[in-house]
Amino acid sequence: MLKNLLVDQIKYTIKLLDDKYKRSGEVIILEYTNMYKEVLASIENDDSNDSVKMKALRLLNLTRGYMESSSDYQQKFLDEMYKTEKLIRSF
Image (cartoon, rainbow, N blue to C red; front, side, top):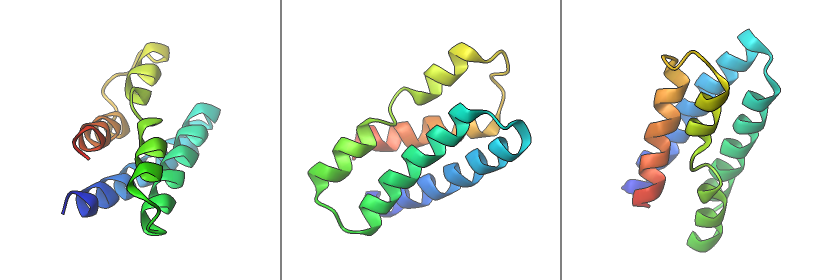
């Protein structure tokens, strides 16, 4: 159940990150997107839980990291990144 929620959340976050990258061209957003896609692929390939966790833990604190470099905190993709981080902590 939690795994399905995490997959759905990651997919939605990737969509928002892709949209943000198309608008801004920020390389960091592309890097974040690739990290999220790596975790998603790991889950969808039925990698071991340890492998998924190891990759997913890399997503933690990306929201905060981006916020430290941006003055616009009210962006939808940041909200969704944070929701993803909360799910990862529960996984």
